[in-house]
Image 1 (cartoon, rainbow, N blue to C red):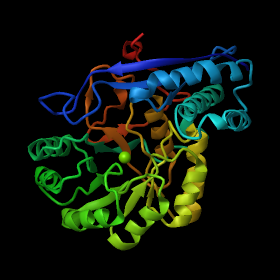
Image 2: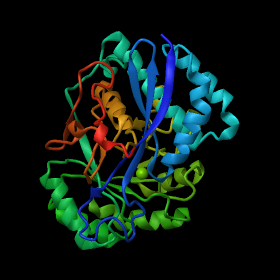
Image 3: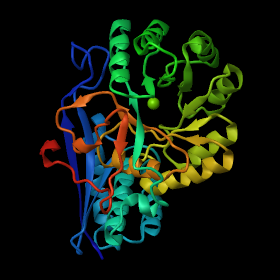
Length: 361
Ligand SMILES: [Mg+2]
């Protein structure tokens, strides 16, 4: 089998995240955009991947189509490990974290989709087989910055059946409002700080303030995200679990975090870390270090779908991150959680075809 074409396709959709003002205000997103990577072969099998996108989609599409596509057309898609190692080496001086590696991550996911289709099996079968028919989702709420909105949306997520909720709030009254909206203590809160605090001391003061609110983890507590020693210092002193890793560009970045003792929970992003291949490498490394893996996947294309297959095959039940936002034109409407659960597709490859209506062009 040979690769005959590699193209990028921008999926874009309006969304409603439970803010009557709509996207805007303190939210930088006006629409949900992502880059789907389509890989065609001479065997008639087409694979789909996803490169981390949002407002970077056009840049990642350029990297994919100008650099990656000419390098892989004519190659055998079955040699995923060899092909990807060669590409990461060939393009390493254009950035080990960014549009270049996001494009390569999308390619890798598409190659795994092709491999699974060629084998006539769902992707999870190539990863050890599904241990469950459905995976719990965690509602990843966008930042509202207004206690009343946080309270209302936490209540709505609870009513929709989610049993895990993450906030992107940094003000304690907003976090306390979420707990009020949930109405009980049985749903733990994950608190994603997105590197807001400039010092270990600021992060520790925040941890003290939120400690009584039922915290599952604090995510990316300090700036900059690669300061593994600062994250480790927060972890050593705050007494709450620490999660990080969505901004790691390479498996080696995770190794540094693990060796520094930075995290309880590693969060590799399949659309950034080198696709399924990178995800498997991080999982193996995390296991060696006794660190849990809960992937980062607040996107809605083949990267989310591939992460679902990864989680289905994991021994430990692990929740799938799903944006708490209703998309007008989702590539995969079947991935909408029902009672907080997402069914694992069982068809060949990724098992779902993107709805063409999601594409901008
Ligand atoms: Mg995060």
